[in-house]
Image (cartoon, rainbow, N blue to C red; front, side, top):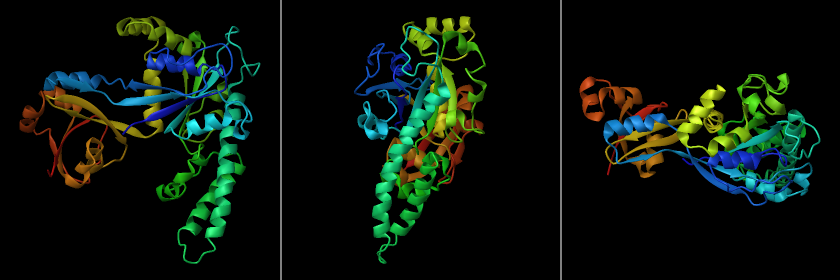
Length: 372
């Protein structure tokens, strides 16, 4: 499955700098004035996975194919965007197309970069964007409510009353300035309002763009910003994530060869790059895992939702594999490497034969048996 993450934020918070660093490109225009990004920039980034190289060596694979993430750098937003201020309508339409939102919040103190807000206040800046997203959703939900109220009066329409109930629930939350994702909606309820393309139902991650020296500190700019899954970070919802990255540092690393970048990080006492940190957080936010396939033609990583069963995983490779699924040979990637690949695994007893109810785990190496 493909994954797209939209990078948003107020003007001059470092969105484009971060985008260029993550994608190792100069694709996004980086200037010291608001709205230098108008049309969204799109970059595809390979997900780093050290397991692939080790598996490929064992299988003598001709190709290594990692999974990828698509990053979309979206124009800066201002207060009033939901009513068309700035690049409002265009900005909001671009957000509707992504799977998750990364909101970059200014927490660096560089006086040479124009601060459109006049002061460093991450929480207030985040609230501006969250409010605009909620207001846009409120307008969308309001229009749908009127249509559903009319449709629900038709005694032959059995679906409209259920949709109306869900839409009212969402509308009430938005009126209370709560994002739609804060509601504990079932999968069926989400499906009923899927065509609304709500902005606030998308998973949200906050990236505090800090000074380089702050990257190695455990202290966030304000103690109250330390969120997590137990408390809403930056005024968001439970389940939102907050991480900190120095976009300036990431830009410096992007200009270095891989090995030099790793050594530079070590000298700074930083264990992982901002890209690695962001991708790990993104997978956690979207509840994703990776399974692997490995053979002589190729070793490849595949992304699926946590909790997916074997036929669903097979369907990521080819949709026909869902119906044609028979069984799957499954082994943990470390056992695959330690025992030297498929031939020896079959003799060792470490390989398991799994059926349709098997729930795939992160790091599983799988060979699917399907009907031709």
